[in-house]
Each structure stands twice: as structure tokens, then as C-alpha cells.
Image (cartoon, rainbow, N blue to C red):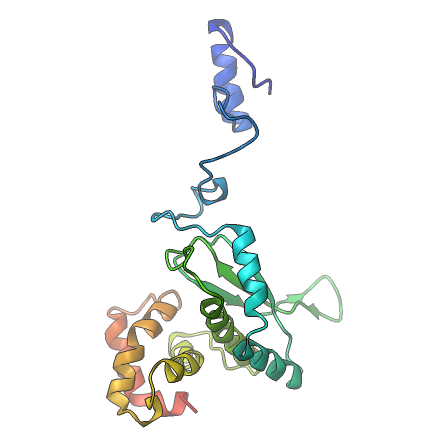
Length: 231
């Protein structure tokens, strides 16, 4: 399309050009720069309603430093010792409110021997939980959480239904809560559940979306199976 179309005679052509080519009808007054970049120009697919999108460069820098944190190195070492695939770790814009997510390795059916990828952890930099105040330790805790899921996936314990996923999330959140609350392991089970409930509900929302009252369901499940899941 010729994006320099002007004048009444070319008005219809300009509209068609804009529709087919995805161009604005008028030239941007700022050449070659987009000072108002919004969710990587993908506002149909993803959102950043608080305007807290972390730049790709900042996210990648923090991610690389977080990989060197002790809690992350420990989980990476555990995966290698168990001969489990180590997932790639990247920054991305996500179409959900998740702070991050883990994708299990998938078989590649193009090869007879079913080559597998290593899975992936994505840090969602367009999430409202991210801002200029995001620290290396924040991202390290997220990586720790998702690497626990990578181990669970390797051992067949990640779970493909609501109940199993609740159990998996309990295990993944435990290290974080033990660091945040001194004496966590000595607390009454009711207090532990009260502390963790919102996190577990938030993480299980998608896979448990068929449940009528998710918070009550998760709470009841944790009351009955917390000790078993926490092993």
C-alpha cells in the first residue's frame, strides 16, 4: 500500500489501504519512534490497564540476574540431578493476569523418536504486579515456583485436574511462605491455609474454572489434604 495517499480523490483508496495494510490514515508526527507504545502494539490480545509494562530489556536483565540467585540454582541443580529437562526462561507479554507460567515439554511428532522440547517458563512483564520496583529476588521467587512445577511435570505430579493442581500449587508455594513467615511449619494447619488460600485460588483459577465456588472448594480440599500435599 502507498501510505502517502492524500486528497479527496484517493480517500477511499486510503481507507482500503489502512484496513488491508494496518496503517493509520495520517502520518505519525514522530518519525520512526513510538513514544506511546502500548503492550507491544497488541492491545487486542494483551492488556496493561495500570500502565506498568516492564520493558523487555529491563525484564531480561532482571531475569538473567535472578537465575544466579541461590534458590534458583538449587532448583536447577535438582532438575539436572534427576535428569529432568531444564525449561527455557524468557520474558513475554501475556494475555492473562498471571505473573508467570510454566509450559510442560511437548513431544515433537515430526520425528519417529519423539524428540521433546525442554518446556518453558515465561515471566509476564505486562502484569500489574510488575513495575519499576520489581526486584531480582521477586523474579527469583517466581522462577523457584515455576521450576518446582517443572520437577512435578517431570515426575508426573503436576496434575491435569483441579484437585491435583491444588496439591501441586501447595508444594510450589511452600518455600516462599516458609521464608516469609518464621515458624511457618509449626503453625496450626488452619493458619497455614488462611495464609496460602488466596495464592492457591489465584493459581488454580483456570484449571478449576468449572467449580461453582472456587475459594470454598480449594479451602475444603486443603483442610482434607494439606499434610499429604505438603510432603
